[in-house]
Length: 347
Image (cartoon, rainbow, N blue to C red; front, side, top):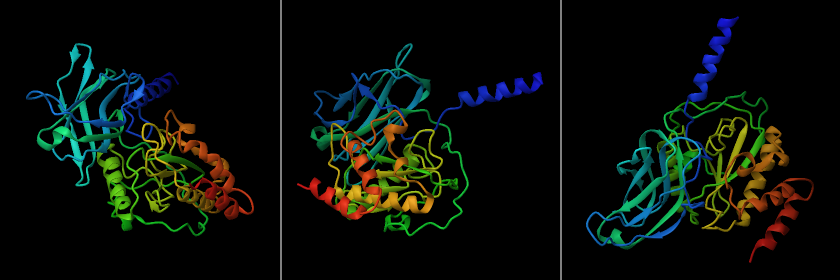
């Protein structure tokens, strides 16, 4: 009996020290209590080797991390990034970021340090020529521990045949790559609303490009198996399939089994405050009614990401509208009440 208790204690200790995979909800980098997100002007350096922009030192972090990742828009192709971390013996050397940038300027960048630490961060942008006087948009910057596989607790697949879903653009329609590993099945029983905290595309071509960017950002930047959400909605109300609805996603830290992620493209939070289109809200209602008919996930299960974790997601602009979505999701006369309400939102 004593031996068994010793083995159980050792197992629990081993599990406690395993690093957690990067997940939606990892700590944001803040500067004096304010998130690092924003639009910055890159300034031509006064001398050789001078940075175009330097951010930090950041606020310290409550938990260890070994990686910082950020994403945004860098119109100038010649911009690169580096980061340094404050260590007990002083600041680390500057480390060059792994940078993925598309022709349209959409980018993500990641720096990994040697070992875990909680010290403050500094991040700088470097470049020359036209890059020396151009804007830089940072939509988000987060820290996390790398090295673990995506956490999931698979559950049973739903037994009943689902109802007909709303029209959406399937994975092959936006050019999705396959997942890195087989998906884990689950039975949907609740719904979480997010925003991408990124670019707000308007045309179909821009939205298709954003879907491919997000998958690359999640798979290769964050280290996830695939794009984290099940459904994404652009500003025109077009619905895109992320992961299949009957498999575990990666959108709420340590709370993904049974949880369906719906995500609006854009940053509905300061400093960007992208508006929420009526068509987007209508898409959440249509998806919600389908999830209820298919799996029993009713409007009472529809929450914002901040209701399930420590995060600002889905943003101060979107979050107050969630009760309106729940109300439109319920009862008779749904379509009429929703259209009337959405019409009042239009300018």
